Image 1: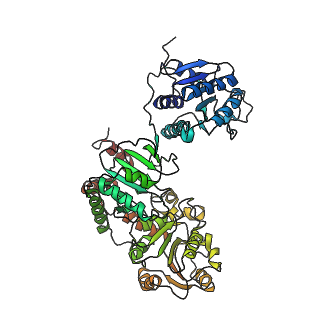
Image 2 (image 1 turned 180 degrees about the vertical axis):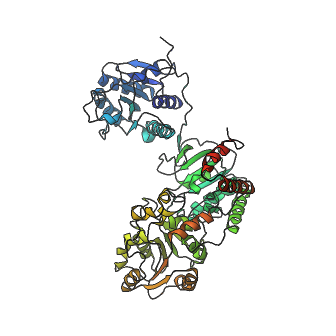
Image 3 (image 1 turned 30 degrees about the vertical axis):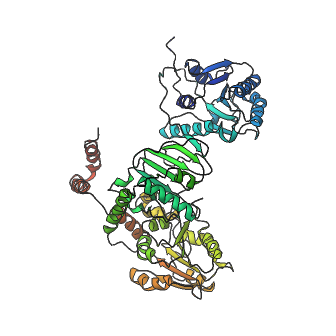
Length: 590
């Protein structure tokens, strides 16, 4: 028999590597075939200390006694069929005593559940008082599977001692591989959870940035804590219009990070501090930091950037105050870099077609002080994230569920909170017609102002960079849902808005928009709510997006583009083949 090491099943390898990283070594194993890859891999690794128990019910209680006496987590391993059912009494004991018992139940691929396959049972439902968390570790085939397996393992192992501890269940798929030739376990990423009572890790040297997703209203003291942290660590805060942060170190760099041909030096980050929830700023969210520290009172694993190292389960201000240096240098060179790049990109934005982006560029800075701005998802939020708004204006977008079904209703809800504040809403036509019924609500006040960008379809699906664009005009039929709701009728929305008591305005060109926008933006309350309908085309919307995201082209890139253009004219239909060869021969490519 050849020398035995670890199984080649990658999900098992990842679990074993993280068990060792977390210092978990004690195991009570029961006989079987389905768990051979897991058990044998532990058996031939001297790190693990194994005990045998043929009766799974007894094994679970042995694990309870061992965990209670040592204070260490204890692994359980069993095969398929009903073996795992016999763990339930012992796991119930562990649950009510908060004992860190890790039940690893090996399984054939769960796709076989319900198909009359021998020894395959459904383990997806676990009694509420048997374990604190239950996960599935499927077989690993892709890089995305590796990431998923690694994250799930971290989540499970962290729960063993979280909030006093308790039992955890891992259902581990196997392919019954007989290959045990893997000599070393893979490098894995261990994630640590830090609470206020724990020792805090040292903040490494290097470039530091804070990334804020959608965020609750900020208190002045919280903004002060962030600003003090940034001042003492030469850091910046990357925001979009859902973040709500209006401190000194605010950077709205979507237009920079979204450039197709220009790589921002500011995007090279050593430590990214991640706060808030979901972000609709896809360009800034594509930052590639070396390491991410997540701060949230919920303490949950949110690996948005796939580089998560620590989760700080605490209020954000506690974190920022801890890492605020007493000897604040006042070095703001990173902030200066970000702002200079932002200005450089904006200085290069060409004249844009009549579009959501052009409109945002025209009026974003002209919103009345202390007003409220609600934005529709995707095209509208992206367009407005390219331009700054006054610091006194609060902004919001329904990025939580990321649907078009309640954007206007959310605006109306916000308008009810303070009738003296003007509440602006900017929405595409599909979002508007989806939620238009709320405008008939009798509580709609004169502080509401709606800007409808009506291009007659879901223009997102016709943008040059969207996969829907590959179908050309055929995308309109079903993908972009064109032609509904009056098909850009100049009368439909006018009658609806006016009959509901709105002052109605419209524009179909830049000149018309410039003429009516002062009325839409007038400060102070008006006698009626205001509705401004703007008619654009999906072609110009796409053209505007392409132009604004390619407005900075470095010289070396421009030369390559010129060469490609000439080659395309000469080689015609053979260009794609030659171009692929050319790409492989570029410097830095193998």
